Image (cartoon, rainbow, N blue to C red; front, side):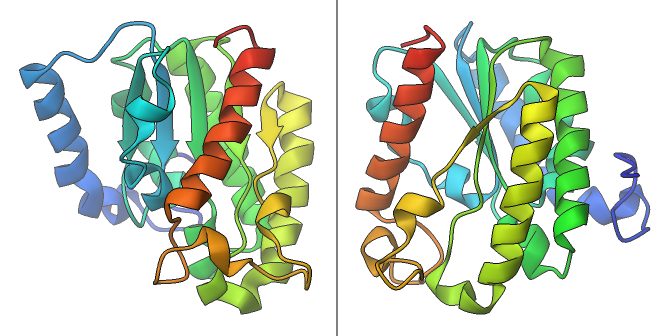
Length: 214
């Protein structure tokens, strides 16, 4: 079982202190510029944080970006009250999990952390539409592709059982050779370029339309 008050590795809440300044910065921004009501909330790791075109990509909907770089799913679980609670979002989109695997977590641990996030999201936002963007393949993490695929399978099953929509961005980011296609990635081989974000935007737009939110 995953304990949202501790890390999956068995540590205590002290492991989450590295994120305190970033979480506090979100609150400071909210005080200076109150966030939009009834927005679509994007949470997760650096692929969310670096989605700088989010507002332009979804011009018909208010959006809030609460990604923090380098984070794992457990970090979003721990800070769910601060990341979700203040906003009363109309929907939530999450991307995280790749850093968990890079940190040595097993696919089963990533799945359990995801399940804990769903519990916390429901606690703070209620039964709003919730989508999970699958863990993408990465040029810089080729060796982890089997673990990524395993984690995605487990998370997909967990999502279906919990009423969460699983959005597959992994498959369309693969090339003909079954590896990550370079055309979607920035120079670091890990983060998305403009084309990569355009692909993700299309996937999320389709989901929002299916949910009657576009």
